[in-house]
Each structure stands twice: as C-alpha cells, then as structure tokens.
Length: 263
Image (cartoon, rainbow, N blue to C red; front, top):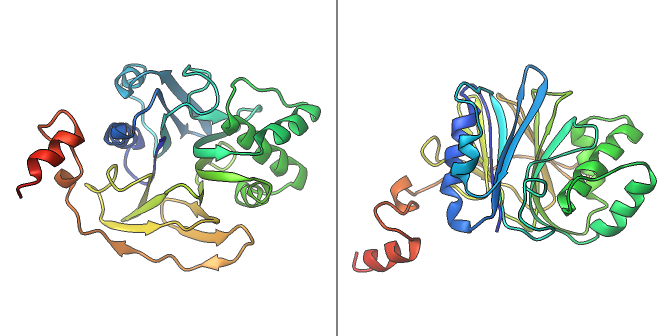
C-alpha cells in the first residue's frame, strides 16, 4: 500500500514531505522518493530502501515551496531506484507519484512506444505520466486539462499528484479508488493518503471523491470532475490528535493497540 505526501505553500516543503513519509511507514514499502520545483527547475531524489536512506541523499540546504513524496510497495517491477517514485515523463518536464494500479497500462504503453516514447522503469506509473505528456502536447493544453483527458482513457485505480516544470505554481492531484486527502491551511495545502502527515498543521480536510481532479496553488483550490463539472469543496474538521495516530513509545501499531485497549 503506497503512501502519498505533497505540500504547496509558503513553508519549506522538503522537511514537511519527508516527515509525512515517515508517518506513512506503517503502510509498508520498499522505496521512497521526492520531487520538487525550484526556480522553474524540476528536481527528483529517490532511493530503494527506507525513508532514512532517502533523507541521507537530500542536501541539508534544499528548499522548495512545492514538493511531492512517495513510499512505494512494488506492484510493477522489482524494488529498485528505477522503479521508485516519483517518475518523470520522457522529456523530464512532468513528475508523478501514484498509488493504485493501471490495469490497461500495457496497451497504452504499446501505443506510446509507437509514438516514440521510451521508458526507464517497469512501472504502470511511468506509462501514465507519459500518456499525460502525450495528451498535453497533442492537444496543446495545460496540465489540468491533459490530466482530465488522460484519465478518461484509464482503467484501474489511482491517487496521483503531478508537478509541471513549465507551470511551477500549480499542483494537480486526482483520485479514483485510492484514498486522497487535502489538508487546508492558511495559504497552504497538504496532500496525503491519510491525515497522519498533516494533522499537526491543520485539522481542516477535504476528502477528494472518485473521478475528481484538483488544481492547487498556494492560495487557491479548484476541483472538477473528469467530465469538467465544477465541484464546491466540502471542508471537514478532523476530531483527532497526532499522538492518537502515531506509534509513540511502542515498536508497532499492533502493540500500541493492545496496550491501549484498557483505556
């Protein structure tokens, strides 16, 4: 079960995303990575192994206001740096993280290869980001519309977050079948597979529904369906504390649950 974390706002996104990935370690994973934008440049760092391995690869002075992070549990391809998320499009202009399975990725990949695309991994996720890139180029449209059109061709489940180096102020996320939450702060947004990565920053949350796509800047959020229906975000208030969803002094969540039963 993969983990997704992203941040867009005024703070440094790198430590927020990394600590969020650590809070999703309970899901199990074999690799981890982040992608970020600095001065219109898209950077990516990923490693097979634990989040601690990833953290050692990240420069201490790295700062960005927009970043996405991922912990992967292998479904397509063995655990490796190449198969770890995030994945880049062939032109290295787009980066994606993905939880779920694209069932028709093989036929889509075959079509992309005929159109000149090459692939560096065995994942269905790299196929998806190149499909979005292909749609964006052929339709001459922005990332949000390209994601809408690409996802209309997809069979399967997904929770995704995408960066575009040519539009560094925007983050696009979408969901079908896999959980994806949007934490709402003051001039900032948090994206995650569950509330654990952002509960210390905000308890205001939007649960993205299936077939919904959100375009996020640091001060604005717009949600539409794949068919372009505009949705009004429904913000809920979480009634939970951070220590209730962390292991604390216990080695595992199972031990925590056992010892907390008397309470």
